[in-house]
Image 1: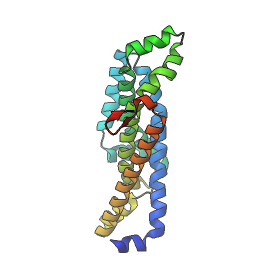
Image 2: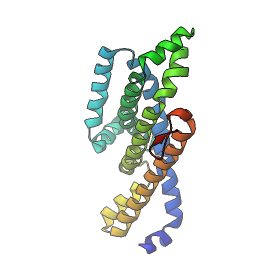
Image 3: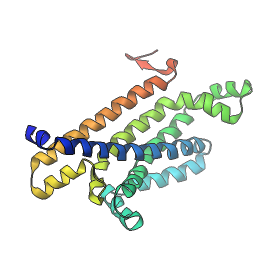
Image 4: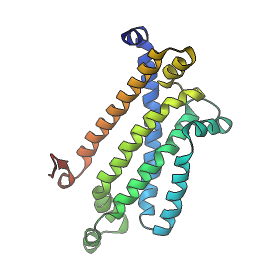
Length: 215
């Protein structure tokens, strides 16, 4: 296994960077799309059921099949991979945003309105900060999913750590498969750790959980 890391050190850095930025672009697009939609859906139960059902159906499409569908639409390379991964990232973020916004106490929202806040001000200054820990849980889950699924992006020529795994399968070299899988796992754990730190940093102090107690 050490041979894999020593012989492919330059490729490992390149493939890891490719894998990381494909995943993060897809995740960022997922957040930009899903969070505002989740906020809007939290105001309408009927529409939310329809939209969440659609995103749930998209989630059931096998990732390899979705990547294959992207080829006739967008060709091969990083663009179709990012679009496919973005689609896969939507459901956890959308669902958690909806749940987080709906779970905000009605009395708390009422207090904001009583203070003269507009609907937008109430959402941005009261509801969103209170819902943020739940939303971040969805983003962290999506990050792990996207980094794992980005392995398959190699199938459509997007590069990344999947190149090691697919080459290992084609050439019958277990060290390439295991080495690629180890790096993907470490990358997913690192992303989850960094997002957990971001969550702690931006979450209102009274909502943080430290050592099993709210601080």
